[in-house]
View 1: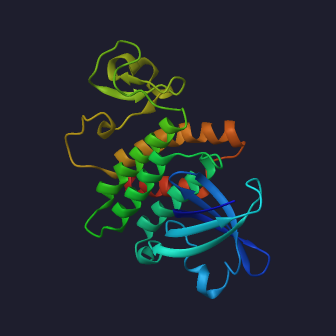
View 2 (view 1 turned 30 degrees about the vertical axis):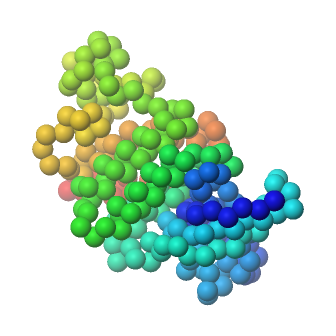
Length: 248
C-alpha cells in the first residue's frame, strides 16, 4: 500500500543513529506515522520541523505496518519563526497538541485546514498576538468539537439568556451568564468575550490566556480519558506566557 499527500509535520523523533519516526497530519488520512531514513541527517533534519508543510510519500507492504516515508518540502515555517519566540512557541504548541489529541489514521479534514490556516496567520509578520491569539483559541475550540467534545457557548445553560455570558460549566461545557453563575463563580471556567461575539474593547493577553485556560481544561480531560496522559509541556508553556503577559 502507498499514498502521497501534502502533510504537516507534527513531530520527528530519533530512531537509531540516523533515522527518524515522523508524525504527520494529512487532510484525508488524518494523523499518520512513518520511518524517514536519514531523517536526522543534515539534509532532512531541517525539513522535519514542527509546522513545516511537506509532500509525504508513505509506503508499506501492509497498511498496519509503520511504513517508510519520503519527504519533500512544500513550505518551511519553523525556520522563519526562529527570531519570533512567541510565534514559534504557538506553532510548536499546536503541533504537540494535535499529536496528543488526534487518534492515528482517522481523517479530520477540518482540523487540518484550521491548522494550516493558523500556521499561515502566524507566518504573517503584520499579525500581532492580538490577532493570532484568539485564532489559536478558536482552533482548539474546533478541535474539541471535531473530536466530540464541543462547547455550547450560545446561551446560558441555567436560564437560556443569550447575553452576558462570562462562564463555562466544567461539567457540561455550556455557557453560563454572569448573574446565574455568580454564586458559583469560583467553580466555573472563564469565557472570554471574543468567543461569544461580545468583545467590545481591544484584545488583551488576559482574554487569550482565559481562552487557552478554557480550552486547555477540556483538552486535558480528552487526552487523559483517551490516551492517559497530560497535555504537552509545549502547550502549558504557551499558556503560562500569556498568563504572565496578562498580569504584568
